[in-house]
Structures are given as C-alpha cells and as structure tokens.
Length: 132
Image 1 (cartoon, rainbow, N blue to C red):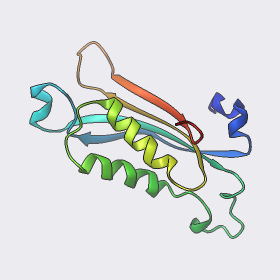
Image 2 (image 1 turned 30 degrees about the horizontal axis):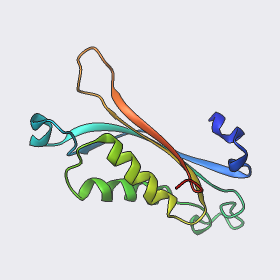
Image 3 (image 1 turned 45 degrees about the horizontal axis):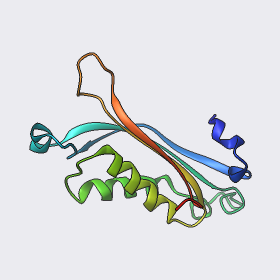
C-alpha cells in the first residue's frame, strides 16, 4: 500500500490504481520516434474521497469508475503526437483532478524500448487537488 495515505490531505480517502498498463502512443522528440507509436507502461493512482465513493447498494454509479481513468488516458493519446512524457503525465493528472471527488493523483509513464541495458526510462508526477 502506498505510503501517501499517511499524508493528512488523504485522510479518509480510497486509492484506485491501474498497474503496468501497456499502451501504444505516438510520443517522443526524436525523428525516429515520430515515425510511429511506441509502447509505454503507465501506472496511475487516483485518490478519491471515501465518503463519496463508499457504495451503499453495491452499484457502479456509487464509485469512481476505472473506465473513467482509462478513457482520460486514451483520449489524450488519441489527440495526436506528444513530444514529452512529462506532457502526457501532466495532462492526464490535470484532467483526473477536474473530476469530482478526486483528491490527488499519481501518474507515471515509462518507455521500455529506448536503451538495451535499461528496463525503462520515465517520469512520474504527484498532484493534489489543492495545488495550482
């Protein structure tokens, strides 16, 4: 479990997560990267207010839906070429934080095919709703 739950801003929160999600994206600043898609591995944590996501009727409408998270990422990738992983994670984090009940997000992106001797290179952002 994430140690972020120690942060007092996340008291009474629930953490939703998507782990090791492999997606193809047109991303990169180099000309070879602009020729097509490359695989990214994404990890996302979405912290939502416990009070507004505790189901009383065991109904999907009572919780924050994982499909919302996936849809936000897929929509951003579908908009077209992205130069930087930083841009991708910042855009996804900002869109998630616009959703009611979302208190904080952690979004990471990792390119896994850049260096033969490195499992991955990437970037991660952690943002709270109360941050500018």
